[in-house]
Length: 184
Image (tube, rainbow, N blue to C red; front, top):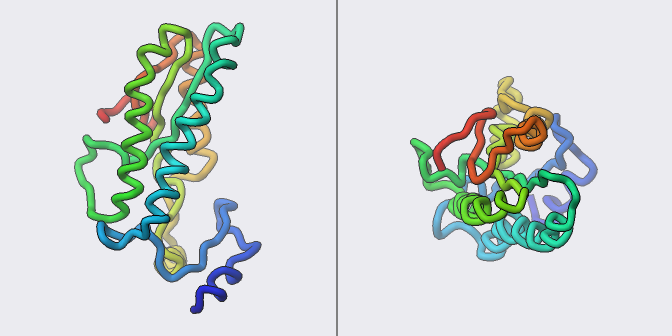
């Protein structure tokens, strides 16, 4: 498939989760060190670490000025950013690096901000999407495999620190997975 065919093949198509289909036969999810395009490395860091930092930084004046006794920053993490994960393959090091950076934003900002009533948490939403290249994703879907969770499960997990906080027990400076605190 040519790059022009790839660029137009999935236009308008969505998968079972409502996400845009990427028809490319390869992607960086299976790439290893030495195989990731530098532009992709920068894009992944921009989306997963730099943008959340800039968003939180830009919202700080509003968060500090709010009359609400509790305010929240929930960073969407993943197992890719855990140092304590039992298994790490060599795949997608750029994603692992970006999620680890996001977790460090939570760890280094949370204590100071909690003293101001701003609670910062990282949440691993769980396995809600299949990031494999299109041919692999299609093959395993045809065999009946689906991610164990869906986007609604992921959204509920992201909202959980806020629900806990409004109930009087705001988590802060922690990584949550399956609604429980886990090691970084």
